[in-house]
Image (cartoon, rainbow, N blue to C red; front, top):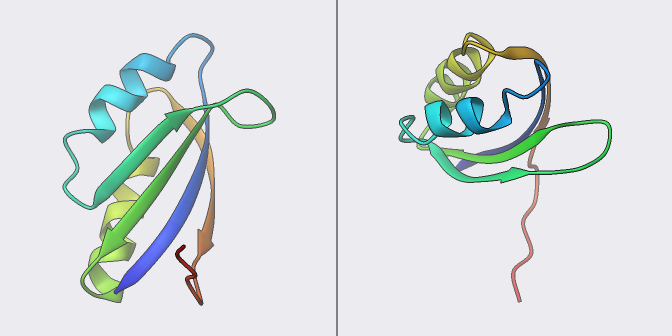
Amino acid sequence: MNIAIVAITNDIGAEGKVMESMSNIPAVRECYMVYGVYDVVARVQASNEEELKITIASIRDLPGVRSTLTLVVCKEHKK
């Protein structure tokens, strides 16, 4: 499984619109509005690297998204 955490900076006040748009992207598993340097953080899970790449590109193209920071998960630990 290919997993990434995507931190998003959006236009002022566009958090809700960005999150709503991301809910229509199948590989976006979780999405949070956050305070701090970034406005929205999402967990993306794809079946392969190409799907992950396409999903991240589609997030970057959403209206209201200014920039993203993508962290590709190399190891996962669950409780």
